[in-house]
Image (tube, rainbow, N blue to C red; front, side, top):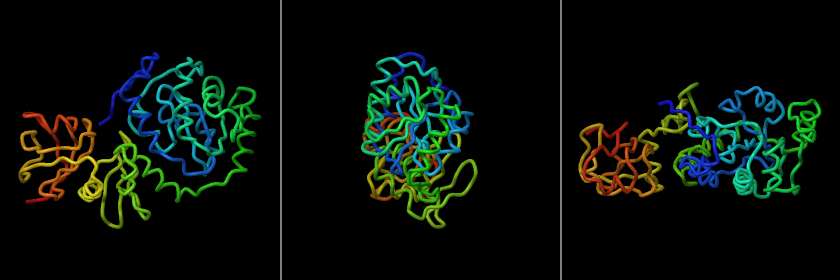
Length: 309
């Protein structure tokens, strides 16, 4: 399902639930390389399809790219196709308010920590970086304020050349785990992606551990839907469980049959259906965890896969 665009026009956008949730969950993510390249956002989403990012990426291969943006703060490159970051509309003039600068600086500082930084930024983007990191371990490559000038790009190329690179094969697993951490709000979600995980498919990507399909990464949302094997893994790590007191007989789980549910579940989350300590199904929650546990009527979960009785 394709999500509608999220308008982020005023400072009130900083308080949107999607924005707050995004920023909180970014704290779970980590860079895959010792050096991070900071880049400004673009109007076009995903960013990598814009003219500016197509140009920048000629120079940044092998390093963690981190896009600086308002109101969401930051977006690691591997997250750029994930809802809601792929669905917001905001100005990209580079003129930021004090509140936007402070918010973005906070997100930057939390993600970057003590990593080296190449900051290919100007305007409010650069102000946010300086607010967060100052000049320690930071090299600013766009001294003239024009990020696409020959001089700025030459500076970017020279600084990237000095850094230790990571191969695509090695950081692909990191990318898949980042999405899992964000979606399931836990570093334990790394368990969904084994060290030898492979993928298949160009648009909707199958996630395979050996020959067993764990999940599907969807093109439209950049999020996973679970297969039964993925549900088993989440259940082992006590993530997004819904407990029932009867044997499933249909593809819809109504709330009267739900005994309990993990409280951190939110509507549209992927969840695991558990009956007598066994995973019997996976699907999409229609309510929050507390509502699933306490509601006396209504559809609780739309089930995608279940054990055949």
